[in-house]
Image 1 (tube, helix red, strand yellow):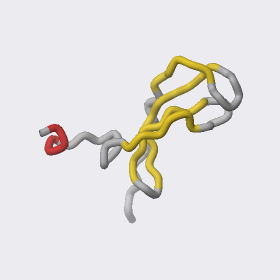
Image 2 (image 1 turned 60 degrees about the vertical axis):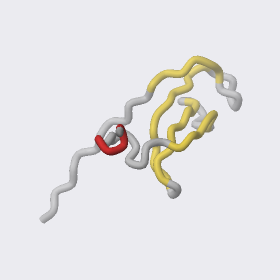
Image 3 (image 1 turned 135 degrees about the horizontal axis):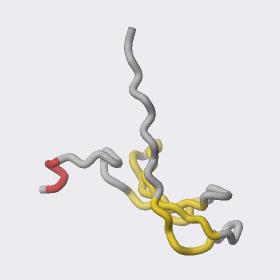
Length: 69
């Protein structure tokens, strides 16, 4: 029987500003994984619209020593 690791909480960093979609304050920055790999996003916590998306580390929140050289 294989064991499944418990889920890790996503660290969301608050970002100043208002959402262009719903106009409310409450933006947050965090890493997400999708079909193109890891992406650093800024999203509204209320309506979940993406305000900004930029490529992130190839392993997302995991930093390898070789990536720091």
